[in-house]
Image (cartoon, rainbow, N blue to C red):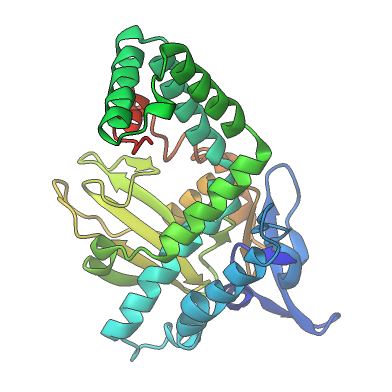
Length: 336
């Protein structure tokens, strides 16, 4: 099954009518390549087996069905109306768009590939635990006390060596492609159940432009930045970070701009089309799309692609202290 990280209903907003094929097509921009004029919507952001579960053959179809009916279709009913001057989001539509935007962010191939970054952080936390003799002995004692209190003498005693062996087995299994895929599916389902109230209660607006200066959309379309007091942009800011701004291009003429309900210490400056397009190129996993050929857009793509690579230059978590993460997890584990 082919899964689309960006729904075709959103991509078609950026398409033009190609007379020769008598179908909507996209201008595709790629690092190191000339702009391509006939990108097909059906294949533009499609991946085979994107939501496959190694242990559940029905899971892929289940996720695709839920994404379509619960998150995509409600927004697609009004998506083409957003550019109308008289259009205003209702409260229900804002809720629907909040869910839509959240899932678009987590579905992108850039985010999926960045799981390796989070895996490396986890592996470092495991190594830190295995090198800490005091933590290992404390977990051993805690697990033995739990078994004693639950009257499970047949499992008593846990030894330090057994704790180490258990954690090393977890470490080994964690690094498999099977685990990475299952972990990604868990992430998608978790975000399906989450409602981002900070996004929903933020300040929403629509940036507008003209047909000769269009917005582009990348294959990682939901982007964030923080603008400091000097006007410098920092990419890949978390959705709940102070001063964060969130963007999602909806057509060549309209881009959704949200200032989530977070602390703000810097004055907000009206973003420009060029700034948004540069950020789209910076976050792109591989491609950007729009409805026209443009040397300016191609220049933006060639100069800025990869500047905000997810998991390497943006949305990283190395700055967070995970030195006690495995220890705390094992101490809270309901053993026995």
